[in-house]
Every structure is written in structure tokens, then in C-alpha cells.
Length: 260
Ligand code: PLP
Image (cartoon, rainbow, N blue to C red):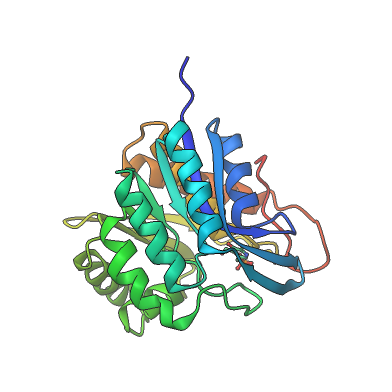
């Protein structure tokens, strides 16, 4: 039996709900062997982010190289990349090793307001990383930041998806969690067609790490050989269940449930 392998290149969340920790838990739950290259260490819990410590470029490069010489990932994702130098390094390494099935979660700001990506790095993300992304998973504020659009309705979301596709992204998924609709609508654009998945909104404050978990579930599905459309469905089902069965851990915004 061969086991699919997935890599996450992202930040560490000491509280265990988001970042590398959420990604590895999701990979494990979806029966994929998980590997990591840590870009930054955050000191945080369910109440918020108290500290952000980016790793040196040398340390990030060495982690990726060690994986490359021994453990080729079947799919990979990026999460918190923090600055333009890290983005450029990570994009160069992915190109150098010709790794496929790249999911880019354009992590920018934590729910509590902490900055996980420097503003000046948005340009590097658009120029270096998006052109090699198989799937990009922005929420509405991230899609606005990347496109300069003010997204009010579904038509605006479609226009944002088209603009992101024009930057070279193969598949854009604009998540609907921040939308105003009664149901949460996630929109997929594959460069030709739109499709959407709807889910009932779940009243809970425990949504810490939902974006990380959703993009990790899509990465795991791609590693297991699913099409992007099927990976989208699997990711949506996984995160819906994870939010529905939320854990009551910590006194702030708790994590979703990776055993869901
Ligand atoms: N911390 C890290 C290291 C992350 O990668 C992410 C991902 O978005 C977050 C925090 C954000 O967590 P939240 O879902 O609470 O915004």
C-alpha cells in the first residue's frame, strides 16, 4: 500500500487550533502522511496572538530541502508566509522541485486582528506564488485585498475570481464565511466555469483555524488523487462537520473539531 504524502509550509500556532497544527491534524484525519516546513512561530491561544517570530530564510530553506531529497509530497499547501522574502523563497523552491498540486491559503490577518502577512508582501504573493497555485482559497477580505475590489455580492465575487484567475491561479475558491447571505456560499472558478457549494450557517464562536483546516482538507484530497472539484466538496464537508462539532476548548475563539 502506498500512503499519500502532503506538506504544509506555514506558521506554528502554539494553541494548536490553526496553522501547522491544524494542517497536520487534518492530514492525519484524512489518512495522509503529513510533513511541515515552519515559516514562523506564533505565541497564541484562543484569546489571540501575543507574539510572531519569523524563522530565518536559511531555516525555512533547509526544512524544504530535507523534504525534497527524501519525501516528495503528492500535494502541498502554504499558509502564513509573513513577508515577501519568505514568499519568494518558498515559490522558488516549489518551482525548483516541480512540486504539483499546490494549495495557497493567502493568510493575512488572524481573527483577533494580528497581522500574519506584512502589507508589502501582497505584491510578492500575487507575482510569485499565485501563478503556480493549483487552488487559491481566499476569504472575502483576502480576495478584496488581492484584487482591490469591494466585494458586496455574488457578481463582485465572480469578478474577483476572474481577476485572480487572470494572475495565473488554476482554480480560485472564494469562501463565503464573511458573506451576507443566509447560507454560506463557497464559489469555485476553474478559469472557465463557476460552481458553488452552499452550507447552513452554524452559530458558534469557535471558528479558530477554519481557513487552515479547509485548505488542508483540500490538499489532503488532492494528495489522494481527487479532482479539484471533488477536493472542494470533500473540504467543504470536512470543515462543515468540524465547525458543527466545535470543541469547547479555551475561553476565547476555540478551535474546530478535527475528529469530526
Ligand atoms: N495563526 C496561524 C499560524 C495561522 O496560520 C492562522 C491561519 O489563518 C491563524 C493563526 C488564523 O487563525 P484564525 O482562524 O483564528 O484567524
